[in-house]
Image (tube, one colour):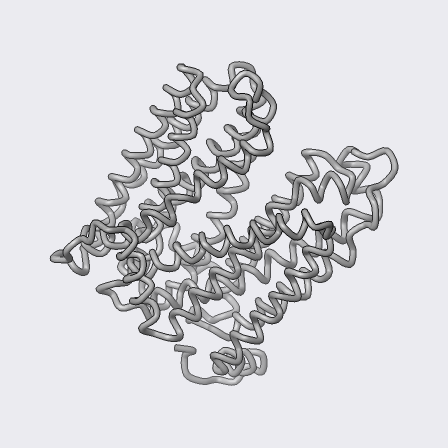
Length: 442
């Protein structure tokens, strides 16, 4: 795997890599710090229920993906992506200043406004993040580059979430959260200044100021290529599937495993590291080319290990719960769950990396960023629908292990649909498994 790690020594990749890592880290640092702060100090901020506040914060953060992804795609096709990255990082510094003001004024609306603006920051950077790679990397480097980006994104989510929780627990938490967010934002801007130019593919593009008609237009660009749109639907399903598991970790750790906050951290770390390992394996397994045969293999692993999580979950929390993490690890109940979650992560990485590379390879350069924007819109839509469906099923009495089982079985159905609509995915998988030389997958 030396090839993909060699990109970290290249100026055409490293500054961008650092910029996107720090952005994802900061988003999750502030979001989790705010949720933890409001959960444990809700009475001093608002009369709203802490659980409602946590869901409100999640909704506020994801709302810009629906509203502004189409506009972000237009900007990334019209202007130099490196220049856009620097502007977005300057916006992040300004947002953290707004957050600081919210803490100083002890104003929940200002803090939620800052969270909304952070969602805007991520929305604007999304099309830049994936559309810039084909401009800076050679075709044989795309799989490795995407693998590093996906692995780093999940590690950044994990570390940012942990850092946010730690800062929220310190004395004078608002001051530490503000300082931490500002430092990371400035570091991200400094990284972005070294990103090489990525000229606009359509500098004469007329911007459509209507985000709703532009959203439909972007989806239309994606639908012009059936294989491309199928890949977007598969990516969106993966985010629904992964987000569904991640959202249940706190309640799963407490109610089923009988653990506390450290158990939630272990589950999140296991899942994130698994995604990273699976992503980084893609380059080695695909011989540095776009290998769509890994997609059915990844989908099969997502189903099998999802079923495994359900089957190995304890029927009831152990006596004396909540137990310390060491006590849980010493018992027979936690380790199988951890291994199954790691398996989901590994096969998730194998599933998602080739699909993102496919978007970059097959996407028309003139509208590639807008196709990425369409992908981001559908990703957000699927995650919201999945969250609502999971909430409804749990509210109707379905247990969390049974919810995992249902999601895994539905994943199997999605994979069958994917292979029926694109039989060459399955053919590519067979050729890869039997080491048959053939043409590239696309």
